[in-house]
Length: 367
Ligand code: GDP
Image 1 (tube, rainbow, N blue to C red):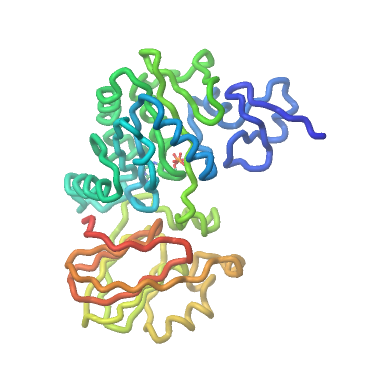
Image 2 (spheres, protein in one colour):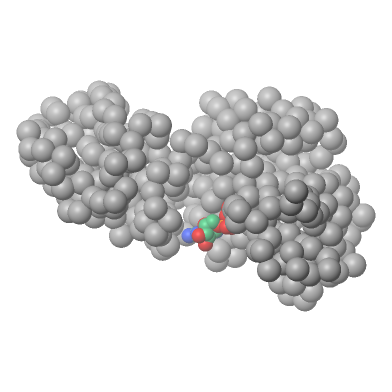
Protein backbone atom coordinates (compact mmCIF):
# COMPACT_ATOMS: atom_id res chain seq x y z
CA UNK A 1 0.00 0.00 0.00
CA UNK A 2 1.25 3.45 -0.77
CA UNK A 3 1.82 5.73 2.15
CA UNK A 4 -0.62 8.58 2.78
CA UNK A 5 0.70 12.04 3.52
CA UNK A 6 -1.02 15.08 4.91
CA UNK A 7 0.06 18.67 4.49
CA UNK A 8 1.48 20.09 7.68
CA UNK A 9 0.02 23.47 6.73
CA UNK A 10 -3.62 22.83 6.01
CA UNK A 11 -4.02 19.13 6.70
CA UNK A 12 -5.18 18.23 3.23
CA UNK A 13 -4.33 14.77 1.88
CA UNK A 14 -1.31 15.07 -0.41
CA UNK A 15 -1.54 13.96 -4.05
CA UNK A 16 1.18 14.14 -6.69
CA UNK A 17 -0.80 13.79 -9.91
CA UNK A 18 -2.79 16.97 -10.47
CA UNK A 19 -0.91 20.27 -9.99
CA UNK A 20 -4.05 22.34 -10.37
CA UNK A 21 -5.99 20.50 -7.72
CA UNK A 22 -6.02 20.55 -3.98
CA UNK A 23 -3.24 18.88 -2.03
CA UNK A 24 -0.70 18.75 -4.84
CA UNK A 25 2.96 18.37 -3.98
CA UNK A 26 5.77 17.27 -6.29
CA UNK A 27 7.13 13.77 -5.70
CA UNK A 28 10.38 15.19 -4.33
CA UNK A 29 8.45 16.84 -1.50
CA UNK A 30 7.47 13.44 -0.12
CA UNK A 31 11.05 12.75 0.85
CA UNK A 32 11.06 15.61 3.31
CA UNK A 33 10.29 15.05 6.95
CA UNK A 34 7.36 17.44 6.87
CA UNK A 35 5.27 17.37 3.75
CA UNK A 36 3.60 20.57 2.66
CA UNK A 37 1.21 21.09 -0.24
CA UNK A 38 2.17 23.46 -3.03
CA UNK A 39 -0.49 25.96 -2.08
CA UNK A 40 0.74 26.26 1.51
CA UNK A 41 4.34 26.25 0.28
CA UNK A 42 3.73 29.29 -1.87
CA UNK A 43 1.84 31.02 0.88
CA UNK A 44 4.56 30.35 3.39
CA UNK A 45 7.57 31.19 1.31
CA UNK A 46 6.33 33.79 -1.13
CA UNK A 47 3.33 35.26 0.69
CA UNK A 48 1.44 34.32 -2.37
CA UNK A 49 -1.93 32.73 -2.67
CA UNK A 50 -2.28 30.17 -5.40
CA UNK A 51 -5.59 29.05 -6.71
CA UNK A 52 -6.66 25.44 -6.78
CA UNK A 53 -9.79 24.11 -8.33
CA UNK A 54 -12.59 22.01 -6.98
CA UNK A 55 -15.34 19.83 -8.34
CA UNK A 56 -18.87 21.16 -8.35
CA UNK A 57 -19.93 18.94 -5.45
CA UNK A 58 -17.12 20.13 -3.24
CA UNK A 59 -17.88 23.68 -4.15
CA UNK A 60 -21.54 23.29 -3.30
CA UNK A 61 -20.48 22.06 0.12
CA UNK A 62 -18.38 25.16 0.60
CA UNK A 63 -21.18 27.43 -0.55
CA UNK A 64 -23.55 25.71 1.82
CA UNK A 65 -21.08 26.30 4.60
CA UNK A 66 -20.78 29.99 3.79
CA UNK A 67 -24.55 30.40 3.94
CA UNK A 68 -24.48 29.23 7.53
CA UNK A 69 -21.80 31.71 8.57
CA UNK A 70 -22.16 35.33 9.48
CA UNK A 71 -19.73 36.82 7.00
CA UNK A 72 -19.14 39.24 4.17
CA UNK A 73 -18.86 37.64 0.73
CA UNK A 74 -16.68 39.11 -1.96
CA UNK A 75 -17.52 37.64 -5.33
CA UNK A 76 -15.10 38.09 -8.18
CA UNK A 77 -16.02 37.89 -11.84
CA UNK A 78 -13.93 38.36 -14.95
CA UNK A 79 -15.39 41.39 -16.67
CA UNK A 80 -14.15 40.14 -20.02
CA UNK A 81 -16.24 37.00 -19.49
CA UNK A 82 -18.97 38.18 -17.16
CA UNK A 83 -21.56 35.45 -17.69
CA UNK A 84 -19.01 32.71 -18.22
CA UNK A 85 -17.35 33.47 -14.92
CA UNK A 86 -20.52 34.07 -12.94
CA UNK A 87 -21.10 31.50 -10.23
CA UNK A 88 -24.68 30.52 -10.78
CA UNK A 89 -26.56 29.67 -7.64
CA UNK A 90 -24.39 31.66 -5.25
CA UNK A 91 -27.37 33.85 -4.35
CA UNK A 92 -29.20 30.82 -3.04
CA UNK A 93 -26.45 30.14 -0.55
CA UNK A 94 -25.47 33.53 0.76
CA UNK A 95 -28.36 33.66 3.20
CA UNK A 96 -28.48 37.01 4.91
CA UNK A 97 -24.84 37.73 4.19
CA UNK A 98 -23.90 40.81 2.26
CA UNK A 99 -22.14 40.46 -1.07
CA UNK A 100 -19.69 42.80 -2.74
CA UNK A 101 -19.30 42.18 -6.45
CA UNK A 102 -15.89 42.80 -7.97
CA UNK A 103 -15.42 42.85 -11.74
CA UNK A 104 -11.77 42.15 -12.41
CA UNK A 105 -9.56 42.71 -15.49
CA UNK A 106 -11.03 46.10 -16.34
CA UNK A 107 -7.66 46.93 -17.93
CA UNK A 108 -8.66 44.70 -20.86
CA UNK A 109 -11.61 46.78 -21.93
CA UNK A 110 -11.17 49.48 -24.53
CA UNK A 111 -10.68 52.96 -23.11
CA UNK A 112 -14.01 53.96 -24.65
CA UNK A 113 -15.85 51.93 -22.02
CA UNK A 114 -17.48 54.23 -19.48
CA UNK A 115 -16.83 53.01 -15.96
CA UNK A 116 -20.12 54.16 -14.49
CA UNK A 117 -22.13 52.75 -17.33
CA UNK A 118 -20.41 49.41 -16.91
CA UNK A 119 -21.03 49.39 -13.17
CA UNK A 120 -24.69 50.16 -13.86
CA UNK A 121 -24.75 47.31 -16.34
CA UNK A 122 -23.20 44.92 -13.80
CA UNK A 123 -25.80 45.87 -11.19
CA UNK A 124 -28.60 45.30 -13.65
CA UNK A 125 -27.17 41.99 -14.83
CA UNK A 126 -26.62 40.76 -11.24
CA UNK A 127 -30.22 41.48 -10.43
CA UNK A 128 -31.34 39.52 -13.47
CA UNK A 129 -29.18 36.65 -12.26
CA UNK A 130 -30.75 36.79 -8.81
CA UNK A 131 -28.01 38.49 -6.79
CA UNK A 132 -28.27 41.87 -5.11
CA UNK A 133 -24.78 43.04 -4.22
CA UNK A 134 -24.34 45.85 -1.69
CA UNK A 135 -21.87 47.46 -3.99
CA UNK A 136 -20.12 46.81 -7.29
CA UNK A 137 -16.50 47.55 -8.17
CA UNK A 138 -14.39 47.46 -11.27
CA UNK A 139 -10.77 46.64 -10.64
CA UNK A 140 -7.62 45.49 -12.25
CA UNK A 141 -5.94 43.17 -9.80
CA UNK A 142 -2.98 42.82 -12.13
CA UNK A 143 -2.43 46.57 -12.33
CA UNK A 144 -3.59 47.38 -8.82
CA UNK A 145 -6.40 49.65 -10.01
CA UNK A 146 -9.19 50.45 -7.52
CA UNK A 147 -7.81 47.96 -5.03
CA UNK A 148 -7.60 50.50 -2.22
CA UNK A 149 -11.27 51.35 -2.75
CA UNK A 150 -12.31 47.72 -2.54
CA UNK A 151 -10.13 47.14 0.52
CA UNK A 152 -11.83 50.10 2.21
CA UNK A 153 -15.27 48.82 1.25
CA UNK A 154 -14.47 45.34 2.55
CA UNK A 155 -13.47 46.85 5.84
CA UNK A 156 -16.59 48.94 6.02
CA UNK A 157 -19.06 46.23 5.07
CA UNK A 158 -17.59 43.37 7.03
CA UNK A 159 -18.31 45.02 10.40
CA UNK A 160 -15.95 42.81 12.28
CA UNK A 161 -16.93 39.64 10.43
CA UNK A 162 -14.94 37.16 8.39
CA UNK A 163 -14.62 37.74 4.67
CA UNK A 164 -15.06 34.96 2.11
CA UNK A 165 -13.64 35.55 -1.35
CA UNK A 166 -15.30 33.40 -4.02
CA UNK A 167 -14.94 33.11 -7.76
CA UNK A 168 -14.46 30.56 -10.50
CA UNK A 169 -11.00 29.63 -11.74
CA UNK A 170 -9.10 32.14 -13.81
CA UNK A 171 -11.06 35.23 -12.75
CA UNK A 172 -7.91 36.53 -11.04
CA UNK A 173 -8.93 35.67 -7.49
CA UNK A 174 -5.40 34.91 -6.33
CA UNK A 175 -4.01 38.04 -7.94
CA UNK A 176 -6.79 40.03 -6.27
CA UNK A 177 -6.22 38.57 -2.81
CA UNK A 178 -2.51 39.13 -3.02
CA UNK A 179 -3.15 42.75 -3.92
CA UNK A 180 -5.64 43.21 -1.11
CA UNK A 181 -3.18 41.75 1.35
CA UNK A 182 -0.52 44.20 0.30
CA UNK A 183 -3.01 47.01 0.53
CA UNK A 184 -4.11 46.03 4.03
CA UNK A 185 -0.73 45.31 5.52
CA UNK A 186 1.72 47.31 3.43
CA UNK A 187 4.45 45.84 1.29
CA UNK A 188 6.12 43.92 4.09
CA UNK A 189 5.64 40.32 5.06
CA UNK A 190 1.97 39.73 4.85
CA UNK A 191 1.67 36.23 6.07
CA UNK A 192 4.44 35.07 8.30
CA UNK A 193 4.93 31.53 9.45
CA UNK A 194 3.28 32.37 12.72
CA UNK A 195 0.22 33.37 10.78
CA UNK A 196 0.39 30.16 8.92
CA UNK A 197 -3.11 28.92 8.19
CA UNK A 198 -4.02 25.65 9.77
CA UNK A 199 -7.72 25.29 10.05
CA UNK A 200 -9.88 24.09 7.23
CA UNK A 201 -8.86 21.63 4.58
CA UNK A 202 -9.72 23.51 1.50
CA UNK A 203 -9.72 27.16 2.40
CA UNK A 204 -6.94 29.50 3.30
CA UNK A 205 -7.55 31.75 6.24
CA UNK A 206 -5.60 34.95 6.23
CA UNK A 207 -5.75 36.73 9.56
CA UNK A 208 -7.04 40.28 9.73
CA UNK A 209 -6.06 42.71 12.46
CA UNK A 210 -9.14 42.16 14.62
CA UNK A 211 -8.76 38.41 14.91
CA UNK A 212 -11.11 37.75 12.00
CA UNK A 213 -10.04 36.25 8.71
CA UNK A 214 -10.09 36.80 5.02
CA UNK A 215 -10.85 33.38 3.59
CA UNK A 216 -9.74 32.29 0.15
CA UNK A 217 -12.08 29.61 -1.16
CA UNK A 218 -10.90 27.32 -3.94
CA UNK A 219 -11.90 28.40 -7.43
CA UNK A 220 -14.70 26.47 -9.02
CA UNK A 221 -14.27 25.10 -12.50
CA UNK A 222 -16.95 26.45 -14.75
CA UNK A 223 -17.30 23.77 -17.39
CA UNK A 224 -18.91 26.09 -19.90
CA UNK A 225 -15.84 28.26 -20.18
CA UNK A 226 -14.03 28.26 -23.48
CA UNK A 227 -10.82 27.90 -21.49
CA UNK A 228 -11.58 24.23 -20.89
CA UNK A 229 -11.64 23.40 -24.58
CA UNK A 230 -8.30 24.83 -25.60
CA UNK A 231 -4.72 23.76 -25.14
CA UNK A 232 -2.84 25.47 -22.31
CA UNK A 233 -0.65 27.23 -24.88
CA UNK A 234 -3.70 28.52 -26.70
CA UNK A 235 -5.21 29.81 -23.51
CA UNK A 236 -2.55 32.49 -23.82
CA UNK A 237 -3.87 33.39 -27.25
CA UNK A 238 -7.52 33.63 -26.30
CA UNK A 239 -6.91 35.35 -22.95
CA UNK A 240 -6.18 38.98 -23.66
CA UNK A 241 -3.17 40.37 -21.88
CA UNK A 242 -3.73 44.00 -22.66
CA UNK A 243 -6.40 46.42 -23.76
CA UNK A 244 -8.54 44.97 -26.52
CA UNK A 245 -8.45 46.83 -29.78
CA UNK A 246 -11.94 46.72 -31.29
CA UNK A 247 -11.84 45.42 -34.87
CA UNK A 248 -14.59 46.67 -37.16
CA UNK A 249 -15.91 44.54 -40.02
CA UNK A 250 -18.22 45.85 -42.73
CA UNK A 251 -20.14 42.78 -43.81
CA UNK A 252 -22.60 42.03 -46.54
CA UNK A 253 -25.35 39.48 -46.12
CA UNK A 254 -23.99 36.02 -46.75
CA UNK A 255 -20.58 36.72 -45.24
CA UNK A 256 -19.07 34.92 -42.27
CA UNK A 257 -16.26 35.41 -39.82
CA UNK A 258 -14.18 32.78 -38.08
CA UNK A 259 -12.46 33.50 -34.79
CA UNK A 260 -9.54 31.17 -35.11
CA UNK A 261 -11.33 27.84 -35.36
CA UNK A 262 -13.09 28.36 -32.05
CA UNK A 263 -16.17 30.24 -33.14
CA UNK A 264 -17.97 31.44 -36.24
CA UNK A 265 -20.38 34.22 -37.09
CA UNK A 266 -22.77 34.32 -40.07
CA UNK A 267 -24.44 37.50 -41.22
CA UNK A 268 -27.66 36.08 -42.61
CA UNK A 269 -29.72 39.16 -43.46
CA UNK A 270 -29.86 42.91 -42.87
CA UNK A 271 -28.15 44.55 -45.87
CA UNK A 272 -24.68 45.92 -45.30
CA UNK A 273 -23.73 46.47 -41.67
CA UNK A 274 -20.74 47.03 -39.50
CA UNK A 275 -19.88 44.72 -36.63
CA UNK A 276 -17.37 45.56 -33.93
CA UNK A 277 -15.35 42.59 -32.70
CA UNK A 278 -13.97 42.59 -29.15
CA UNK A 279 -11.60 39.68 -28.89
CA UNK A 280 -8.04 39.16 -27.78
CA UNK A 281 -5.81 41.00 -30.24
CA UNK A 282 -4.03 37.71 -30.84
CA UNK A 283 -7.06 35.89 -32.20
CA UNK A 284 -7.13 35.70 -35.96
CA UNK A 285 -10.36 36.78 -37.57
CA UNK A 286 -10.95 35.26 -40.99
CA UNK A 287 -13.63 36.53 -43.34
CA UNK A 288 -15.28 34.31 -45.94
CA UNK A 289 -18.50 33.74 -47.84
CA UNK A 290 -21.06 31.84 -45.76
CA UNK A 291 -21.58 29.37 -48.59
CA UNK A 292 -17.91 28.41 -48.34
CA UNK A 293 -17.66 28.46 -44.56
CA UNK A 294 -18.54 24.80 -43.88
CA UNK A 295 -15.95 23.44 -46.27
CA UNK A 296 -13.35 25.95 -45.12
CA UNK A 297 -13.81 24.76 -41.55
CA UNK A 298 -13.76 21.12 -42.55
CA UNK A 299 -10.53 21.48 -44.49
CA UNK A 300 -8.66 24.10 -42.54
CA UNK A 301 -9.68 23.97 -38.88
CA UNK A 302 -6.52 23.39 -36.88
CA UNK A 303 -4.24 25.19 -39.37
CA UNK A 304 -5.57 28.31 -41.13
CA UNK A 305 -8.33 28.44 -38.54
CA UNK A 306 -6.43 28.01 -35.29
CA UNK A 307 -6.61 27.53 -32.29
CA UNK A 308 -7.56 24.71 -31.76
CA UNK A 309 -4.48 22.86 -32.96
CA UNK A 310 -4.52 20.17 -35.57
CA UNK A 311 -3.71 17.39 -33.12
CA UNK A 312 -6.68 18.47 -31.02
CA UNK A 313 -9.26 18.34 -33.79
CA UNK A 314 -10.30 14.75 -33.02
CA UNK A 315 -11.42 15.68 -29.54
CA UNK A 316 -12.47 19.28 -30.09
CA UNK A 317 -16.26 19.62 -29.72
CA UNK A 318 -18.26 20.36 -32.86
CA UNK A 319 -19.40 23.95 -33.42
CA UNK A 320 -23.07 24.42 -32.61
CA UNK A 321 -25.18 27.01 -34.41
CA UNK A 322 -27.34 29.53 -32.54
CA UNK A 323 -29.53 31.97 -34.50
CA UNK A 324 -30.48 35.43 -33.35
CA UNK A 325 -32.64 38.22 -34.68
CA UNK A 326 -31.29 41.49 -33.33
CA UNK A 327 -34.18 43.80 -32.62
CA UNK A 328 -32.39 46.57 -30.77
CA UNK A 329 -29.50 48.74 -31.80
CA UNK A 330 -26.32 48.35 -29.74
CA UNK A 331 -26.52 44.68 -28.91
CA UNK A 332 -23.64 42.40 -28.04
CA UNK A 333 -23.42 38.79 -29.11
CA UNK A 334 -21.20 37.15 -26.53
CA UNK A 335 -19.08 34.09 -27.27
CA UNK A 336 -18.51 33.05 -23.70
CA UNK A 337 -14.88 33.26 -22.69
CA UNK A 338 -13.74 34.39 -26.11
CA UNK A 339 -15.17 37.86 -26.60
CA UNK A 340 -18.14 39.58 -28.16
CA UNK A 341 -19.41 41.36 -31.27
CA UNK A 342 -21.33 44.57 -31.03
CA UNK A 343 -24.14 45.03 -33.52
CA UNK A 344 -24.74 48.77 -33.80
CA UNK A 345 -27.98 48.74 -35.78
CA UNK A 346 -31.17 46.76 -35.28
CA UNK A 347 -32.86 44.56 -37.84
CA UNK A 348 -30.26 41.92 -38.55
CA UNK A 349 -30.38 38.19 -38.51
CA UNK A 350 -27.21 36.39 -37.53
CA UNK A 351 -25.94 33.00 -36.44
CA UNK A 352 -23.22 32.41 -33.86
CA UNK A 353 -21.34 29.12 -33.61
CA UNK A 354 -19.45 27.95 -30.53
CA UNK A 355 -18.05 24.59 -29.40
CA UNK A 356 -20.75 22.37 -27.94
CA UNK A 357 -21.02 23.17 -24.24
CA UNK A 358 -19.89 26.80 -24.51
CA UNK A 359 -22.49 29.52 -24.05
CA UNK A 360 -23.63 32.27 -26.41
CA UNK A 361 -25.63 35.17 -25.09
CA UNK A 362 -27.17 38.32 -26.44
CA UNK A 363 -26.99 41.36 -24.20
CA UNK A 364 -27.44 45.09 -24.25
CA UNK A 365 -24.16 46.50 -25.39
CA UNK A 366 -21.54 46.92 -22.73
CA UNK A 367 -19.94 49.82 -24.55
P1 GDP B 1 -7.50 32.58 -10.18
O1 GDP B 1 -7.52 31.24 -10.86
O2 GDP B 1 -8.87 33.15 -10.11
O3 GDP B 1 -6.84 32.59 -8.85
O4 GDP B 1 -6.72 33.54 -11.16
P2 GDP B 1 -5.21 34.07 -11.17
O5 GDP B 1 -5.01 35.11 -10.13
O6 GDP B 1 -4.30 32.91 -11.18
O7 GDP B 1 -5.24 34.79 -12.58
C1 GDP B 1 -5.70 34.12 -13.75
C2 GDP B 1 -5.16 34.81 -14.99
O8 GDP B 1 -5.72 36.11 -15.09
C3 GDP B 1 -3.65 35.02 -14.95
O9 GDP B 1 -3.17 34.84 -16.26
C4 GDP B 1 -3.50 36.46 -14.51
O10 GDP B 1 -2.31 37.03 -15.00
C5 GDP B 1 -4.69 37.10 -15.14
N1 GDP B 1 -5.16 38.27 -14.39
C6 GDP B 1 -5.43 38.37 -13.07
N2 GDP B 1 -5.85 39.62 -12.77
C7 GDP B 1 -5.84 40.32 -13.92
C8 GDP B 1 -6.16 41.68 -14.27
O11 GDP B 1 -6.54 42.52 -13.45
N3 GDP B 1 -6.04 42.01 -15.59
C9 GDP B 1 -5.62 41.14 -16.53
N4 GDP B 1 -5.50 41.56 -17.78
N5 GDP B 1 -5.30 39.87 -16.24
C10 GDP B 1 -5.40 39.46 -14.96
